[in-house]
Length: 337
Image (cartoon, rainbow, N blue to C red; front, side, top):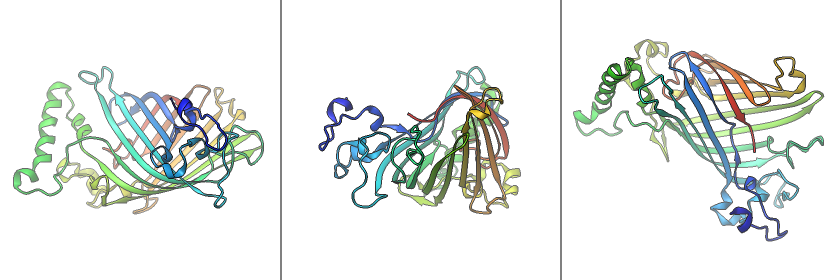
């Protein structure tokens, strides 16, 4: 479709589907083992597309928005002209034979609007020094992140029944899951979490003697009241997670465990002594409210087609973001297309 309809007015270049949509975060399917959960099939989809598809003032040809082809157009106004993008990342888990009816549970929905400044030309697959491109940028974003569930407090209760609605629904589900699955904790998967945030990301890559290094520094400021979310949905007091509430001095919030992120990835054939691995990644997260008091670390070893990872800290998913626990898993991953 796009190959037939979208052409560059200046060069007559027919773009491929890669110029319309690419990966934003890695896409994967695998199996995850959480300390506080049953094992589940874990899958994620993440894509980014030029906003020019919707906003014609940037030109209708999206090929000149990604520095990944020979037809990439150098910005004319100034060297690092911002480009507009729309992106979406989603995550879900299927509980195969570990829960009644093997449900698929939504865990993360993250649409965002970004303004990105590309820092270098061309594609990272180029062997020429300084010509990496798709991993070299600075980005401002406005995003929304939630788990797509419904049980929570009513934002503006008008009577006692509305004020207690979330608690009543949660307690009812706990009794149901106790009977059906023998585990009332499953009801937590239907608790609603959601935030709007302002984000800033700097990504860069370097060629080294034995391979390539990729670095991402990512910051998010979670809004109390946002355009898409409205009032943020955090921990509810009727969840009765009193032990964790005490750990947070009586106030649990996302900004105490998340908001400051760093990712370091080293890709090289010199790692093949580790079961024929070709890359290793270390990711760190902490909150900007009480920074470094609560730290999450995730280590991943990548092979030709699969990866093996281990996480210790917080943010196992959006429902239990404030729980400190561990998880590990194996996945088939696509970093880019």
